[in-house]
Image 1 (cartoon, one colour):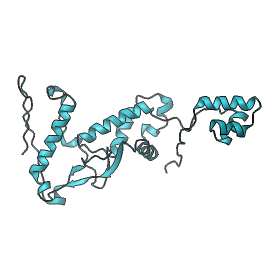
Image 2 (cartoon, one colour):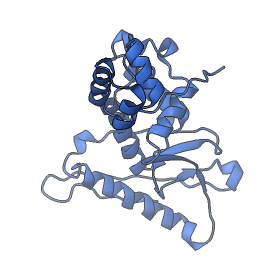
Image 3 (tube, rainbow, N blue to C red):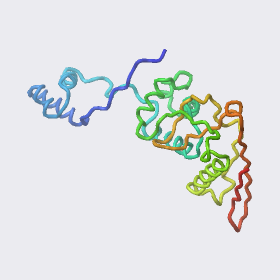
Image 4 (cartoon, rainbow, N blue to C red):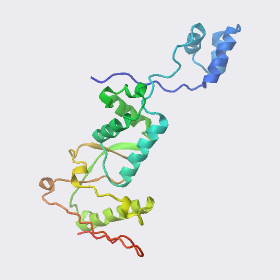
Length: 234
């Protein structure tokens, strides 16, 4: 059963203001007037005047720092641009591998190094302005817009953009093959993480559901003196 703990919001006042307020109260000023002056909750200031908390913070120590979570976000955004769907199970796998490099004092927050549902939910809330979870659309024949040729062109346009944006057009040795075993094959109703307002939600459907299948054949050639890639889709 997941924990019902909800991390508190960060205080609206700086810690320096709290220190000044405590000093003023200790010098004889009334708690109410000082709390109003520094915009600090009355009970918070009163508690600090009586006895300063042993641990100064706004809840549990986060497993990842803000900068570390930015790295996770950067990875999610890149995979989203590559049209690679990342769901909750994939996030758990990524985080589990990252936890191995954390100090024990932080890594111990996850049982067996695996983040729970609460962490996933809080992660979504913290980055809700940049990512969202949506259901994947079936990649099926649906009129002219969903014809095989249109799908192939969409894929290669996206692929070329990724190559250019990451300076890979002249670095084929940095491009690795991703076989079928590495793709996300979860159920179609599984939500995936995508960059906010992203339109790339395509996912191939099993042939038994659409009564047809589409195969991509990638043909690449590397030429030192000319354009390196010659891409064709069949």
